[in-house]
Length: 60
Image 1 (spheres, one colour):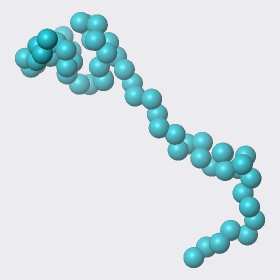
Image 2 (image 1 turned 45 degrees about the vertical axis):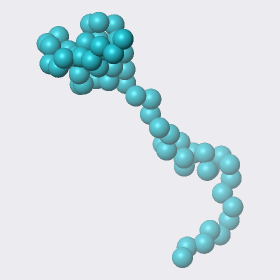
Image 3 (image 1 turned 120 degrees about the vertical axis):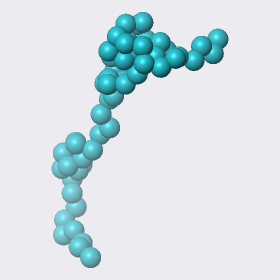
Image 4 (image 1 turned 90 degrees about the horizontal axis):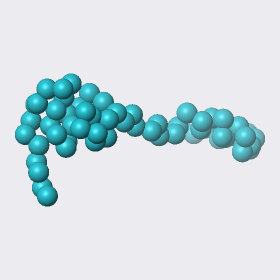
């Protein structure tokens, strides 16, 4: 098993880990005004690209 020869500094450790972050998800707003993920059906109104795709659940 590999064993390091010298201690890695905080700076080098941070530079190595700079790409390990979790990216923020992209959010778009549907025509109804609800935030949703891109390329997916709006859970509020059930539309995708302006077309009615599914019947949305009205649990109010």
